Image (tube, rainbow, N blue to C red; front, top):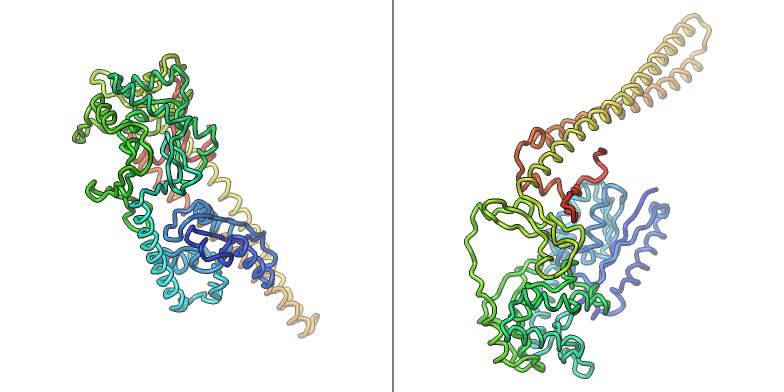
Length: 512
């Protein structure tokens, strides 16, 4: 069955525009349009919704899912207007003029009265470009206004982040005001107290884990706030670590300051941010009640070693960075540059006295040898299976083509027989014309069928050739590279007995 994707988007700035842009309103509009068009009524409808995402960026969960399916299971993409799809002039134009036509996907913007089917073989009207430009200008204008409002609120000491700083909670009386959280503020106070007593961040983490003090991750998980949009928490933070403790000890906001605008987006069309010099930060003194005094905060800084950035060298290169995961606790293994025996270890043992993964450790060279062997084995299997699959598929097409060619020869013989019967006076001219026309039509149909099969057969050779080229850079590989590892491997699981399991990026493509 043919499929039509309706894409619905509502950003935070659209909320002020009322019901006209609501998700339900967009849904009703698009479904009514589909029911009014005979050529769309038999389509299966799939919904993709991005609620609370700006149109300035194309990095949206539902849109990403939709774009992956276009050209595969989705034949039509429909939106209320161009701005629902996106407010980025270049990206919108690229999809409408290049990507969708190439994939054979029909694009409809209902309120713009735009249907790409009406522009097949020609360029859409200049209205599309002008409207996309207007939407992008509107988006930039909205962005400037939002930043101006935020700056004003920051200067007044208002807290605008999605989640309160650990140790605080939102005031129910004053909007955007932080007050001490009776459950977590004592934890923060104790962190600073232990630091002032000379305890290092690692020692503090060990104490908290031994006492069963819930980490910030576990606290938010218990409260159900770990799923809030924009709040990313790693399973590695289920325990206290030196990194978490260090971050809180360095945070000046616990002295009552509100510090904002430490980073800013490079452009509205990207999520990338850049650091802002401290001289340009917005710092509001006494914006909320302090958990620790300024003197206590300064004293706590003395226990922490100053961070001195080291210049990067080739020796620091970590081929498996972020890939090795402890199967017991889920933590990413840390690389230890021991000159005699570089290895990867699970660092949980540093913060938890008794843990199952205390012996999780893998020698770097042993790991490289194992991964290289597994990659070589997988490539050999892939080549073997690909050759067999291609051979079976090609044989199937060739058999069908031979069958059609025999049918065409039979039709030619029948046509010759008709000529002979006409010459002998055994067939009238009218019957001859009727029967030859019928045979010609059948022959034409068979020829079309044969052409289609030949195209499929040629396509399998093209795919096989391209696959061979891709495998050419891997087949016979004798050394691991970052590109090779990144393209083929998703994760490497390390078990407590130090056995390994590779999770590949090409799932279900190769059978062992």
